Image 1: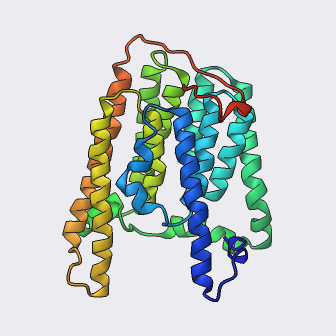
Image 2: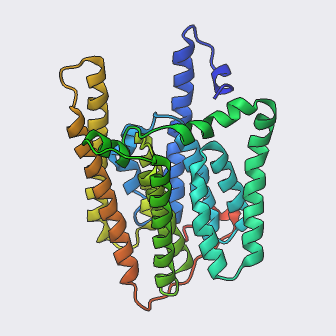
Image 3: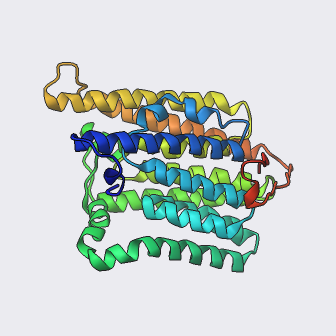
Length: 330
């Protein structure tokens, strides 16, 4: 971020900084859409046209991590494990919570009895993360730790299930414990789901579904839900989709996200004294609507997977160099 600010000279430093970052993020958005198309060409078009996605593009720098995570999935689909592990390590270094994707990696490779591959994958991912983080941790440990400390110590925050509950007058104790327990219980459920469908679908179809469900659970159990989290969920969703019938559930969920985007800015406007701001309880209802539509879409993916029956599909593979030429899918 600091380096990008040096590339453009402008009397207004803030404007120059934004302009360059906006350009880079726009390019990353295009790249992410292309990668999603290479992985799942049937439904990739849904990602760049989703209203909440477009509305979130310039909030934070998540797309740097999104693009690298999608590229990691692209190589995972083609069983290029080292490339995949390296890029996932980059993604985790940029935005820590892609670490939950390792749950799907462990399930898939562990179930396939590829123990050595899994060990190597985890080692490469960890080494890549350390390459970015260790120099900063050693030279500015307090600054490096601040991100983790903030997330450990923060209370319920905007957009989260816990924030909505508090706005509705329900008190919570031990928020960290509640959040962790909800996440663990849901992850166990995802694991059970995987073992129930592992032999009925292709390896990558299972991985894509687990990846989406894991991130969806993480952001739902989290103590905060930032609007730009939709930049993570939507490409993972279109990659996980396998049936045209799932599009209705997708758009119901996206409508819930679009409503929430309206609600969050209207709610924040009330803090500046605006007459059109949303009251607390109405904002809480919009949060619940968003979560409910996400759960609806997730349950649709699960139902589709369970209906796969005894069908088993092969997994398309390609060389890394064939990225632009190969249109294979998992």
